[in-house]
Amino acid sequence: MVKKVYKFSHISLSTSSKDSRVLPIASQVYEILNNAGIKVSFDNSLLDLQRKLKKRSNSEAYIVKNSQLLIAIGGDGTMLNCSRRYGSQGIPILGINLGKVGFLTDISPNEIENLFFPVLKGDFKSSTRFLLEASVYRNSRLIGADIAVNDIALHPGMAVKMMSFELNVDGEFVYSQSSDGLIVASPTGSTAYSLSAGGPLVYPTLNAMVVVPMNPHTLSSRPIVLDSASVIDITVSETNKLNPVVTCDGQNDIVTMPGDVITISRYKDEITLIHPQNSNFYDACRSKLGWGSKLSS
Image (cartoon, rainbow, N blue to C red; front, side):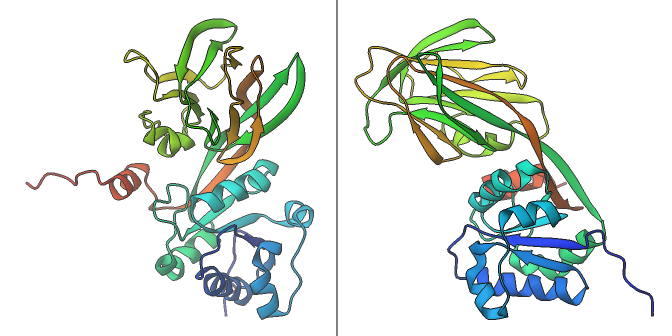
């Protein structure tokens, strides 16, 4: 009998989804990997799996040190969470999609049997995505920082009020603006919050970032596409009567004060996403965004 050779010898599982399908899918994936002779680990996000298998979960540090692939079970929110925790530390990530849109997660639950084994054998595509980093300074002192896979947003927080700020790129003044905020998105994030705010779609592997105003108080304000090496500085206006919030991937808010400066730039590390061979960005756009199919001949 010929022994099957797999690309990965140690794979870990993680989620941040509360979907009831997580446990049966995680159990299915665990069984497939275990039967293939692949070592499987999972973190404490899968406590239900831990109880079912009567096996202990593993720490993030253990997974980072030992895993060759991380399987994220959930929607794009789970992919973002896993990318920040594991992908930014060098572990490639494959997504099983339980969400509604899922630009980052390629495999649906009913495709696991057909698409999983080719990936395990090394028959896959990979893409490298850069991250964004936000640093908030008050009186030239760093008060908070975080990274984002999709986007960094400056917004009013809970209050529905217009705010004012000044935008500079690479030390050059761009504009001052009154609006509901500003979104800075990576190409990966161009299909998310940025898109709903009127930003352009950017091919995922381009070295570019998008600056998108949120409901600006002027008809002439438009999204700007910048080189990914650009350094963006946003100064919160002293005239603001609220405390705008910086949010990275919809998580981990940093509350600012008038006069604070938010610096946004490309993060030093990148993430690697694993895709089945049939994965295609334009197919995803047609499926998720309702684009038309080919004209009939």
